[in-house]
Each structure stands twice: as structure tokens, then as C-alpha cells.
Image (cartoon, rainbow, N blue to C red; front, side, top):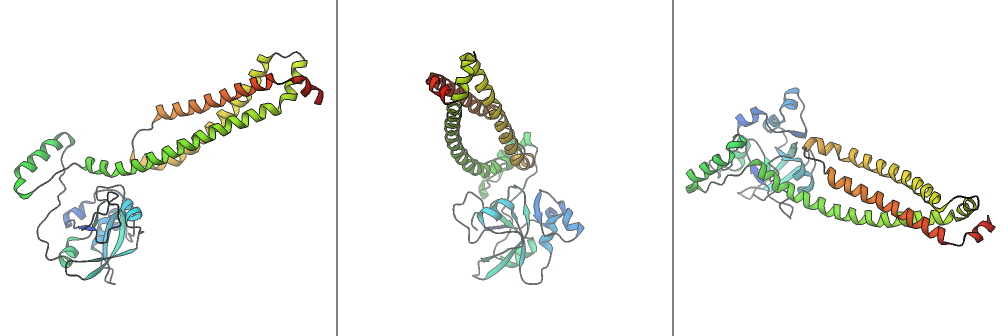
Length: 295
């Protein structure tokens, strides 16, 4: 069948089908994002949904949540029509969605339904091997060496997940670049607003100058005021961003790019303070006598 993961640029018409054995279904492995479980037993082990008989001819299947949503463009409970090797069509109904699993390229149905729909396919072609991480390389080399006559190709689950995440990270990098461009434009807009605010304060600055305040006092006052606004804005924006990514961060794990994030925030703060200094210097260079007369 066709690859149903994000590595396929096109929407698959006949996704690849895997048929877990009854023992695998009873083992209740992998995490689920959602399911159509109706009983407590099915809620504890959504794999049991593959053995449910819907009664309307649809075959229950399980898909990865990412592939279901972004590749197949389906939702939980939706049906997918595919063609078997005998040119007959069957209806597949998605009854559960796995959460960020290694099965992003396949749909999974019970072994009984698979044998009934695809009797021409014999034997087993896909294996899940439970090996310790420290022994994974040795196990991979051993299996590929001993089963080379059968074209056996082994790979780790981490590498398979990394290939899927690489595509996602490419999209994220693209959006990050666009976000950086927006941040640059926003920073320039911030500098323009700060300059305008200081220029609008030139009459007040002229009055303070006449009362004996020094230019250094003006700089401290303007920079302090703008620094407070900048810090409050950065704090609010950072807090909202962290709250937005918190569910995905805790569900998938990983590390927060604290260094690059802190550097970016410091750059925005430095740009705002520099704009305040430039705006204050520009205002002080203006003829304050005319501003004082208008005041």
C-alpha cells in the first residue's frame, strides 16, 4: 500500500495495512490520543476496538493521530474507502488514534479481518522487536546478517520517529523564519512609536529643562518608562507563548531552547532601549524654546 505518513507528499488512496496479532492486541502497548471506546475494557486497551463487529460492514482500523488528521484528512469515526487486490472496495472506519507513534505510515486492523480481505498475502513481513537501547545496534546487525537472504531490513523506533519529526521540524523552521521577519518588522514599528512618543513630549521636556533638569535626567526618565513597558510586554508575550506550547512540550518531552529564546528577548529589549535613547537625543536636539512658548 501507499505510505500514509507525512513523508508522502500526496494523499494516499490505498494506505499500507498492518495486522497486529491477537497477542499484541492483548498487550495494550503504545499511547492513544483518542478512541471510540464504549466499555471500560476498551478504554483501558483501545486495541480491542479492532475486534469489534460494527454490523454495518465497515472494518475497524486504528491510525496515528497525525496521519489521520494531516495526511488522510479524516477524523475519529470517519470512513475511508480503499480497493483490495481483487478490485473490490472495502470501508475502513477509524476507531482510535495513536499519539505520535511509529505507525504514522500505516493503518492497523485485526489479523482476522486482514486474512479475510487479503488472502493472497501470506506470512509476516513486519516485526516489532523489543530490545534494550544499549543492544539495539547489535540486534539490528545480527538480524540483517542472518536474514539477508530474505531482504530483512531493521531500524530503530527512534530513527523512524526522527524521520517523521524531521518533516514537522522543517515546517516549524519555516514558520519560525516568518515569525522572525514579523518580529523584525514589529521591532522597527516599536522604535517608530517610541520616537513619536518622545517627540510629542518635547514641550514637557522643554518645561523641565527650564526648571533646571539636565539632559541626562531626561534620558533616565524616558528610558526607564519605556523599559518598564518593554519588560511588561515581553513578560506577557513570553508567558502566553509558554502556555500555548506547554501541552505539546509535556506530552512529547524534549528541551526548551532557553539560550536562543533568552538571546532573542534580550535583543528585542536592547532594540527598544536603543530606540528610546535615539528618540531622546533627537528630541533634545530640537529647538526647545519654540516648544516652551507653545506650552
